[in-house]
Each structure stands twice: as structure tokens, then as C-alpha cells.
Image 1: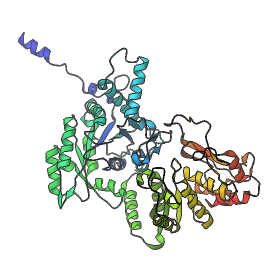
Image 2: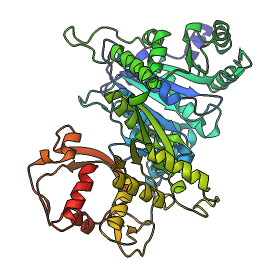
Image 3: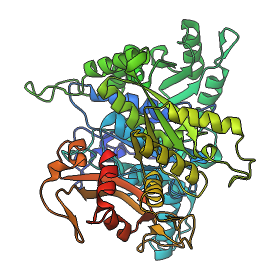
Image 4: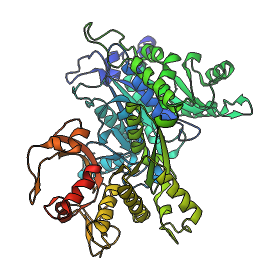
Length: 572
């Protein structure tokens, strides 16, 4: 009887696949090649570069001979549904995806580094999760149960991650092999606790061969000594939540010393080879190479049992690191260049105090400069400093004469001018003044979003004779409303109500009449050649104002303004 009693207390043995739902199909049959999860958390302070770290890790994984498809998820613990209503000063650039989602700028890093196309569901926020769960509760989906953070919120997070991890992100439509997950904020923040708890549950459900947790920490240098205490405490906090990191990424100004690496390994219970130095480099394109040189690919391949066999002998891996190494070296050479190789671009905006506010614009300029073999120098010009101003929108004292003089010197010394987007009236007159200078001085310029609208305002005022022409965003009762509120947009709600996401644009040619451009002759337009001889292109939109149709037709109608309008637009 005693033997039977002890035996009955033991839990019945379970097949290993039951504890890993990721490995079962709809018929509960075992599936080879389960989804692999790599989670990146951060500690000590925010802004350590988790986004670049995870993007670089993904780029490195793409170089495997097996050509794995990589996808990414960004978890933002704030209560906002998305980043659309946040100030750029608060959170940096609001990045827009193809499907119109306004999200964190890290998703832009993922898309640029990995060549993937993400969706709004790849950006998980507390607001989205709670809205989903509360919506289900209101519909009665929980059958009268008490809805709680655990298990209902944590279950929803895990369900969201699993669903999104299997969504195709490449043109081939293949289900990804590896999912990279970045947890925003720092370990220990109250707002991120529920996500860390969900990930704790996920690691056991998926199994150790499918789940790797990493931790990005700061190793400050005081005097000449690299301090490990912040990393020790960060890892300790993570372990107290049931999450044991197996890789430690150490951000520092200098490469980690051997003693520092060994000390971190000992106090964080991590293999010393898994302590990775992510020190400052000359450009961010060296980060994947930095990780490769320290054996990160071998660590991940071993931990996740990743295949290193080629997909097929006759299919080369186009993601090898050779071209990447050449690009990183070329960027270094350009950075050391002088004279005619340097191109100066004046970026005239209203959020110039935080460069991340225009991250996509900066990256576009950088990629273009690499393509044409030029070193990019950006002159940051606060648009409001270009005009006389007493008190600004924020209540500061405006700008002094010396500041205005310095701002105009940067504009006049630039080889080109770019005016990016923004909201609100502050700085608009400065943008208009700079664009007038560009037009009259034959300086190449590009207007994006509000910058494009400012170009229209400037042209209407100074060429078409529409005195006081303006946007209704800045002057509701303007005599010449050349930029108007789009009729389909909700004027009362702010979040997610703009024209958002990828929209097709047809490139026309030939003559313009009352009905727009005639068909054919697209090769006569500069746009046709700028877009590599494409007759239709897709660009991402984010705006709630547009150029009034009558003004648009005036630019291209057969009037005395036709030649002026065509000349100006072709110049762009």
C-alpha cells in the first residue's frame, strides 16, 4: 500500500511535445523545425541600442547557409495604442509601416537591416493588448470569469507573439524560421512586468531548444576601470522574475577587458564566451561584424540547434557577410574623405534638438550617399531660427540675431536642402523662407510631407501671386487656402485617423489638361527616371492635409503659369 501511495503522488509522464505547443500541428502531430525565439531585454538605462543589437543579430543569422527567414517583434510597454500621438521630442520618430501603423522607430531599423516588410501587429503595446482583452470581456468571451492580468493578459501576449511570429514578412511568403523579440524599456520597470511574465511562461512552453534570452547592459568606465555592478544587478533583477539570460551584450565605450568579461560571466551565471562586447564603433554597420567576430553565430546555432546546411547546393546565399563588410569599410573611407567627396545637406526642421525625430530621413540620405560614394554632412537648422520671432509656440524667447545669422550661413553653405515633415505652425515661415532661397538660387531641395506643403505655399505666394496663401492647419480663414484638410479624415480623433500607409502613385507624362496628365510619354518626366523607369510606385503616407485640387491643376494647366510651374517642379 505504501508503494502504491507514493507512486500515485507522482505526476504521469508526458510526451515532450505536449510541453511545446509550437511543435504540434492542428492534429497534435509533431512538426520538425519549430519556431525559434530570441528575446532581447535591457537594463540600467534606456537607449543602449537594443534595436541595433537585435537588428545586427538578425542580419548575422541571415548569413547562415540555410538562408533562414527572420522576423521581428517590438514590445513597447506604454499604454498608448501606437506611437501616432506621441511628440517626436518624447519618443523620437514615428515610423509608418506599409499597412499604415504608426509605430516605434526600431521597426524601421528592422526593415532596413533585414529587408523585411512588417505590419502593425509586429509592434505590441500595452494599449493594444488591454484593448483586445477588454473588448473580449465586453463581448462575454470569457464566460463570466474574473478577467485578470494573469492569466488573461499574459495569455493574450503569448498568443499575439505566436501568431505574429508565423506571419510572412518577405515577398516569397515563407513562414519565418526565427523570431527576434525586443522588449522596450528597462528590466524592473513596473509597466513591462506583465510582458516579462508572459515571456517567462513562453520560455517553458516553447522549451530551451527554441528560446534564447539575452540582456543588453551598460558597462560604464570610471577613471580607467570598467564597472560591472550595473550589469550584475540588472541580471539579478531579471533572474528574480524567472528569466535567466544566456547571452549578455555589454555596451561600453571601449572593448571589454578579459577580467571584466570573466567577472560578468561569474556573477550572472553566463558562459564567458556568451558575454559579448558591443563597444563603440566607427559606424553602425560594423555591429553585425563585431558580433560575428566574437562567435555569436556559433552560440546561437548551438543553443537553438539551427541548421548550417545549405538549402540547395546550386542556390547561393545572397546574405553572406562579404558585401556587408565591404559596405562598412566603404563608409569608413567616405567618413575620412574631404573636398569634393563631401556633400552638405541642410535639414530644416522643427524637432532638430533630437536627431531621432528624423531618423528615416537621415538613413535615406546616408544610404544615398553610400550609393554615390559621397560623405554626408548634415547641417541641423531649426526652421524658426530663420525668421524674426518674438515668442515661439513653446513660449521660449525666440532666437537672437546671431543665431539667425548662423542658421542662414548653414543654409547658404549647403549643397542641397531637405525640409521634412511635422505638425503645428512653429517654424513654417522659416521653412517657406528657406524654400524661396532654394528656388531663387537654384539649390536642389526636397520637401517631405509638411515640407512639400511649404513648397506649395511658397510658390503660390511668390510666383502665382496668391498673397497670404497658407494651409488651413495654420490659418483657418486664409484668403488662399492652398493646403486643406482632407474631407475623409476625422477632425475630432487624433490617433490613427490620417492618411496612412503605402499608397500607389502613377507616374504620368505628356500634356496636362483639366482631367490631369495624358497617358504615355512617362519617360518625359524626371520622376520616371528617379524611380528607375517605373510607371507606378508605392510610397508611405502620413498626413491629414493635402494640396487643394484647384491649385494642383493651376500648376499644370495651359495658363501663363504653366511654364513657371513645370520648370519649378521639374527642377525638384
